[in-house]
Length: 408
Image (cartoon, rainbow, N blue to C red; front, side, top):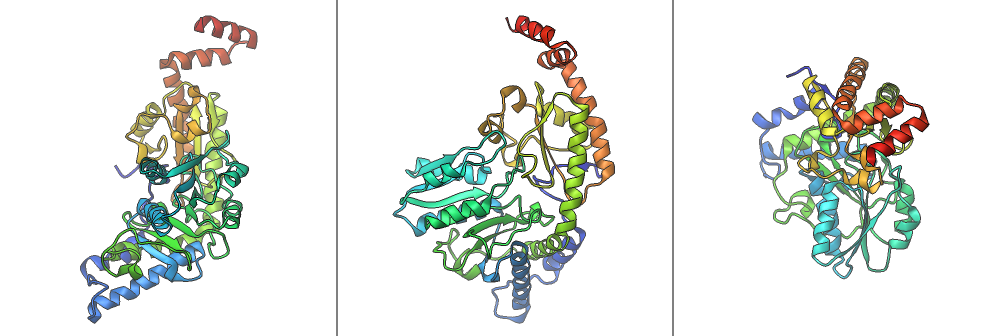
C-alpha cells in the first residue's frame, strides 16, 4: 500500500498536507468548546468564523452567515429538503431527477411512502435534462425543486442557472446538491437563483465528516437537527472544530488553484479517454462529453462486467469505481445509466475514472497501458465479449449472419 494510482476522486479525495496541519492543533492543543464563555474555548470560535468565510468564498456567497456547517453532504441534502418541507407543510409535491445521488434519491423515495408526491425528471442518452418537462412539472403544490449541479457518476453538468430561473419564476425554493461540483467548477451563489446548496469537504481534499449547507438570506428554513444554539439555531450539536477548520483550509486551496486545476485535470482526463477509446474498440463514453466535470470519465466496455475490470485494476494498484461509493453494495446496474437508457450490453461494463489535482501524466500512461490488456483478457473469458471481438474482425455481412446464427 502507498503506491496506488488513485482515480476514484469522486468517491473521496486525499487530504492535503496543509489541511492536515491546520487541523492538528484542534485535537490536542486548542481543544476548547467554541460555545464556552472562557477565552480558551471562545478562541476556537474565531477559527470557525474564519473557516465559514473561506467556505463562503469558495461558493461565492455574499454573507458567511449563510453557511451552516454539517457532518456531510447527505446531512446537508436531508436538512435542505426536510427543512423546506417543514417550513411549508401545506405543500406536498417535490420535483427532482432520476439521476440524483442516493442522498436525495433515497430521501425522496422515503417521502413518497409518507404521502408526498414526487416528480422524477428524466434525462436523455447524454444525461441531460428536458427543461420543458421541468417547467411543466412545477405546480402550486410544489414545495421545492432539488437538482444536482453535476452528476457523480457521469460528471454531466446540469444548466443550473436556467433551471433556477424557471423555478424562481414559479416562486418555488431551489435546492442544489453541489457536492461533486464544489472545488471543480466556479460557483457564485450570490448572483444565482440558487436558494440552498450542499457541499462536502472530502470531495475537494478536505476531511471526511464535515460539510456545509448554504441557505440564502430570507429563505424560510426549519432546522433538521434540534437541540443547542449552534449555527445560529439552525443546526444543533457541538461543532466538529478540527473538521470545520480543515474544510475552510481546503476551500481556500481549492479556490486559489481552481483555474489551473480545471485546465490541467481536464487535459489528463482527455488523454486517458482518447487513449482508451483508441486502444479498446469495445469502449464508449457515457454522458455528454462537452458539458461534464473536468475530472470525470465514465466509460463502458461492451459485454464485460465493470466489477471484474475493477478487481484486475486493483491487482495493479489502480483504484477506480463503477459508480457512486454510496451504492457500491448494490448488485443493481447504475440507476444513472439506466435512466439514460444505455443498452444493457454496455451498462454492466461501466467504469468511472475520476481524477484530481494530485494525479500525474505518468499515472495516466500506466492506466492506459493496463486497461487494454485487462479488457482483452476479459473479452477472451466472456462468450458475448468474444463474439463481439470476432464480429469486429469480420466483414459486416458475415458478422451479421454469425450474430443471427449465434442468437438463434
